[in-house]
Length: 281
Ligand SMILES: O=C(O)CCC(=O)C(=O)O
Ligand SMILES: [Fe+2]
Image (cartoon, rainbow, N blue to C red):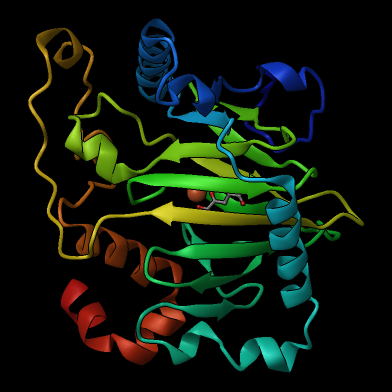
C-alpha cells in the first residue's frame, strides 16, 4: 500500500499493492471447488479488513468501459445551459445534474460536478483541476450509505481510502472496478463487514478526472435486520449502526439516504423538502 499523510497529496509509487485484487473468474461455476471456497474466504477477509478491493475477471469488456467514459466526457462538455436544463434542483427525488459547488460533504463544497441517474443510482462525475487557493476537496471524507459501490475510475487517480487513521491512494488498475461496501452492509453484520471512509483529492492543475459509479442499494422502504453471526465472526464485529456515534446508520435504507441527501444537497432540500428540514431542527 502507498502510505500518505492525512494532508492531501498525489503519490504515484507501488501501484500494484494498493488494494487486494479479487478475480471473479475464481468463482465461476465449474471452477475447482477448492478455488471457489478460497475466493469466498478472501472476499470475506477483504470485506472485513479493508472494505475496499479491485474486482477483475468481471466479464465487462474494455469497449463498454471506453464507451461509458466517452459518454461521460461528452455530457460534461455540453454547454452549461444544457446541463442545467436537467438540474437536480428541479427534482424532488434528488436526480439530475449538480453543478460545481452544488454539493456539500461535511459542510464544505466538493470540487466536482455530477449527474445522478436512475433508481439504483448511477452517478457520473467530473473533478476539475485544482485551482490556485483551492482546498483540493474533490469529495470530502465519507462512507457510502447503501450496500455495494462499483467505481469505474480513469487513469488520473485521487481516490483515497482510510485505514488506521491514514489515507492510502487507490490508483487506477486497468480493466478493474473498485468495489467498496456501504453502511447498510455494516449495519446488517454488526460491523463485521466494513463501510470504509474514503475521499477524492482534486487532480493537479491542468488535469481533469472522470469517474462513473454504480450504487447497488436496497429498496427505499427496506429495513435491514442485523443477522446472527457465527461466534468466531461475532467476536470480531465492532458494532454496526453505532460504530460512529456522531453519525449513526439508520436501519431503513430510505431514511439513511435521505439523511445524507438533505445535508449534501441543501438547495434541493430547501426547494422540495422544507417540511423535512423543519422537522429535523
Ligand atoms: O469518484 C470516485 O472515485 C469516488 C466518489 C465517491 O466516493 C462517491 O461519490 O461516493
Ligand atoms: Fe463514496
